Image (tube, rainbow, N blue to C red; front, side, top):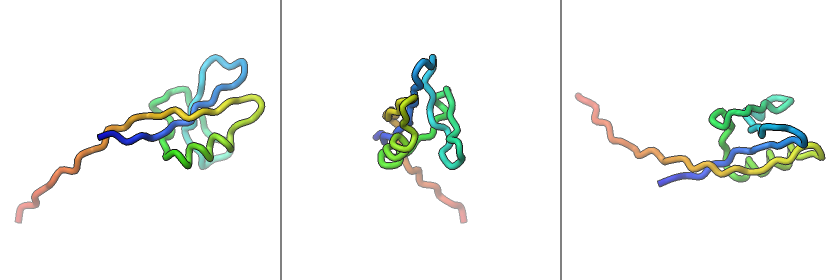
Length: 79
């Protein structure tokens, strides 16, 4: 079973590489070019981030990322 999370990809006009949001709790928002370091978030949070970061110079879009759900394993505790 897989869950879908979203990363926000930002492309600037004239820029060569797209960047991803790494952290949102600081001003300015921290960005990275490495997709593995991108902040994965739920759809509603990602849509809010897209609206907050869009401007005339950059375009933000949602990138879906499939995440495999971990199965819960039972652990027996010896007595």
